[in-house]
Image (tube, rainbow, N blue to C red; front, side, top):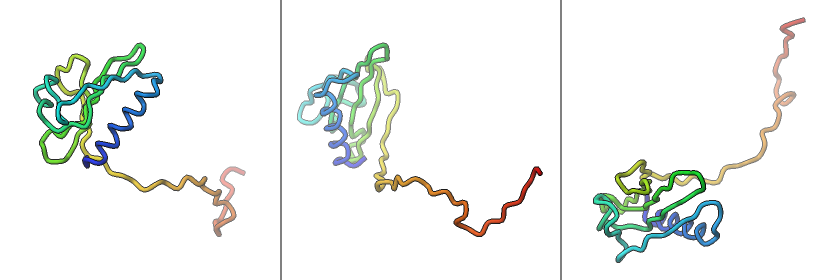
Length: 120
């Protein structure tokens, strides 16, 4: 994902963290915008944030926003609490225009449809 989108996403997580809702979020400090001693695939790569997310009665996960390949294409990666290896990653993000949320109007009597009785 684009670096600006990655930064915005990290900021959203930090904003959520400040509000302390259902999930408890801890931010891992970065060294000059990179992770250290996290996981061999994530260390020393550009990173916008690494967050440990805890929820009651749920698995604890790390959310890491990292540029795996150092190509300005950030990935959102989920790691288990143990950091043994990635569970899932999202790297492509398309921004859609806002959707028009109007209710669909009933089309009956708006067209010249023919109505036939099937079961008399």
